[in-house]
Structures are given as structure tokens and as C-alpha cells.
Length: 115
Length: 110
Image (cartoon, rainbow over the protein chains, first blue to last red):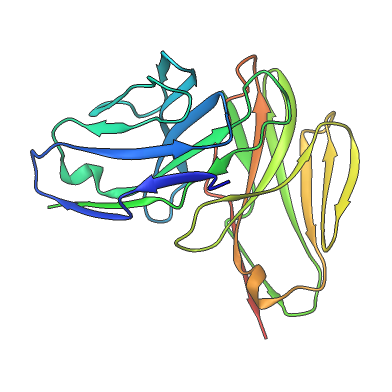
């Protein structure tokens, strides 16, 4: 199993550009989520999904869109990039949200800089 | 909401034992996770406690007291590679969605 994969690893954007961060998992996990982590800070939840076709907002959803058309893929779209979105983005998945022991498996992260 | 309290930073010597404490306040508590995050890397799962008591896994052990809202992570025979942030993550509510704080930055020196 590849686990959770993310592309690209690094990205530089100009203010106003849009782009999609890709995330895929091959563990047949129901639950997938996107976090951002700023320097010296904890992970903040952007959006999450409990299954194909179902998404919901997390703590900091503004400026981001998600979709979940398949179990495997959960892309994160930046609509119009702003310098405040400079961060490290982690995608995570877990077997489900229904079970108590549902440890998160994280992708390696995408380091995004918005100029 | 959740309130998680753990020290911001700790230092320890290689070969020693260190205990990272975590107190939490949350409604609908289900269990508590510990994750490790090395600088520049993604978090990785260490342990999960749902019942009171100590769970041991090699050099790492995790303890939970549900009534006191308290947990600790015990690291024995510290190695330089244990320098990382350690995240205490309560799981609560019907949705089980985890909330990650800043964690405790552990620095292991020779």
C-alpha cells in the first residue's frame, strides 16, 4: 500500500491564482480530511469528508473548496490564492469516524508559498 | 469545544526517561490519541487509550485517567531521534473528529 499520497510536494503561487492540491489513499478509508499547519502552530482542520459525495467544513474553510467523487481521492482547491494561505497542507485519512480507534494516517504534506 | 493543556517545550538527556503530561476538558470523551511529529514531517500515530490505565508499547507508554481528564506519554531510554513534537489528541463527541493542538516540543540532547 502507498498509504496517503499528496501532490505536489512544493508549490509557489502568485496572489489570485487558483490551484488544486491532490490527495489519494489506497486503504479504502471512509474518512478523509485536510489540515493546514503554520509555523509553530497546531494543525487546523479545513474540510473533511465521511464518504464519497459527502463533505463538510472544518475550522478554517474560507478560501478552499473540496469534493469527494471517489473513496480514494480528496482534492483541495484554492479558489484565489492569498499570502495568508502560505502554509503546509496535510491530507489525512482514517478507517471511519464511527469507530473509537480511528487513528489518522497522514500524507507527506504540500508546502505552499503564495507571493 | 475542547481545551487541551500540555507543556510547550521539554528538554531531556539521551538515555533518560521523560513524561509528557496532558490535561484535557471535553464533552463526550471517547478516547485519547498520542501522535509524534518530527520537524518538517507529518504526524504519525503512537498510541490510543480508551480505558483507564497504562498501555505499553516498546519504549513508549501512555496512561489515561478519564475521571481526572489526564493523560501522559512516557518515553524511556531516550534517543536523539525522539526529538519531536508530541501531540495529545482527545477524541470526543459523536463525530470523533480529532483536534490537534501545538503539542509538546521535546528536545533530546547528548
